[in-house]
View 1: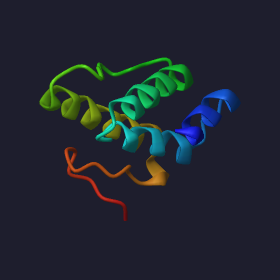
View 2: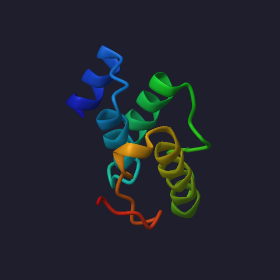
View 3: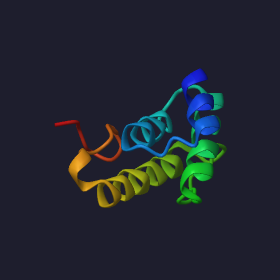
View 4: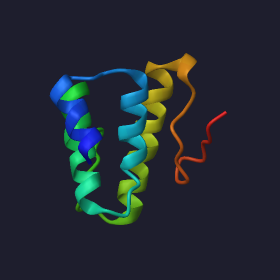
Length: 90
């Protein structure tokens, strides 16, 4: 959680940071998910419909949207891992 807070404080919009935040949207810890989406919103200006209080299936769809967004925004960086989005690091 400290790394997420630091990224927000530093306005760190690097692909590695954004990638890590997207990966944390799948966290079992609701606090980590909340902190990650709020930081993504602060850094990118969007949530892509991710809601930490939504049912798992709805959050999973939003994670898939984030993975697709990341791939489109940072095509040379590879995809963040997401079991729900069916992507893996290469």
